[in-house]
Length: 170
Image 1 (cartoon, helix red, strand yellow):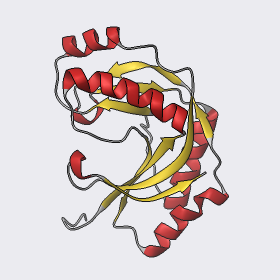
Image 2 (cartoon, helix red, strand yellow):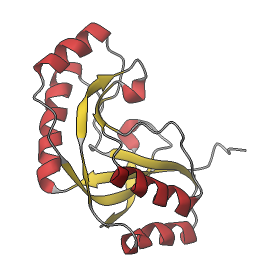
Image 3 (cartoon, helix red, strand yellow):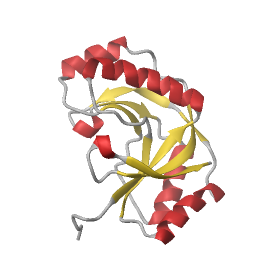
Image 4 (cartoon, helix red, strand yellow):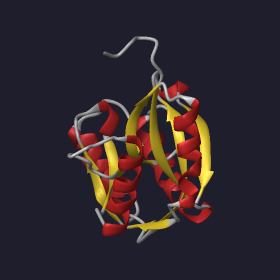
């Protein structure tokens, strides 16, 4: 049973500088119009981990021994009504990405049968029409992105208070 004092952590993938710059440019364009909360662009890989102990953190840090940087292939912009998946960039489920996710899920005994890889550009409530209009003004999605680090991110509070507690470079 979940205790209200438990700390929730997710494992994010983050990007090399060139990919980060391209994503931040799009993120800024989106949030100049939609005015969402600030967050670092990322792809959620797995989670949640509830109040990880020191052994779990050490296992997270040792992922660099097993996992190397990978290329992600953006597909298109999408949106839903969900606040935490309001406007985003879909990422193709390549074998490389799904193998990375499988390895991490196995390491931490996690599963997500409904995994939809994406990079959020906006969190919040906006009309479908606003999102469609904004997407029509955005540049094409990048042809590829390089994921070169993993982060263990505390997310048990609001978006404005998410913190990266540990980061490892692949």
